[in-house]
Length: 439
Image (tube, rainbow, N blue to C red; front, side, top):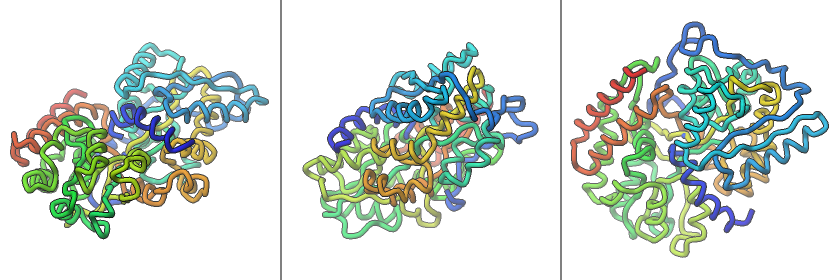
């Protein structure tokens, strides 16, 4: 697909993929929240997939997902239908609205009605716990056990809950640090150095997503996890947000605005305003998703003058990131679970990874990053693989939307000067505790 087409479709896609802010190792803390155990957890009694059911499966299955603005899913289903035509198996696409919230509501409405309309659903990585707890998904553990080694390990954690795997990663995502090569001689080795460079470079400044929405939760947790902070206890039942590490991360962000490393306007920025500020020459560094790379290569002021890198370490902590993307899940009410599993198997294959890479959608299979076709389509493939590998999932909890709201509202107040970092972290901790009590 020509770069101009990629730029156009990605600009439209960003509202869908990034509304939920579109997500390692052990260093730098983690999200917590893999509550329950396989024997006595919240998902006991859920339907379990039979791996052998896809052998010789026939009929039609329906794949539900957001509006296919890039055409990647249409292309993938075309390839699937061609491959399985002789077997008597086919798939069709049912498009939901672009908004991630609307996609979630469309799926919830069908599952509450125990509708079998959606066999396979493209589920945002933050919805796993909510859907699994309601027993709306099939437990894919028996199938995934034979495939775990194929995926970048961090991507699997977004599909894991209650000791089980509820989906197969379809696409992943992780943020990059963009930097102007005509303003910065070498990539920063720490976040602290990045902010120092932002203050002294020409143009000066670092831009990111600081508005009160999901994107700020992601941006904050990228730093907080690297600093060693957590959100929930390991069992997901208690908030551990009020910690020195989280205060340190937020103080760092607040000081960045006070000292001029980041503009005050960053408190109103989402992905697109941050991208436009960088492309218009108003910043030397930017935190954003990979979608901005191709768009930047068409912007006259920065074309050929920037590079991307995985996030550096946070001094005194480690490296981190937050995973975005989507997982393929099978509805517990599917009338053709064998056909659904065959489709899921194909859409998470190397062939599908190449199709997705043609529309700049990050692959999930480790082997795919060595594929020449993918390296050609994604010139930052090596950096992307590293960024996804060091990233962590957001808190895996049935009440994640409320948890995120408590984080971004209070972090934004601190960045705007309405609260001290200490008070903002305490207020968010209280909000998270109240959210956990609702479930």
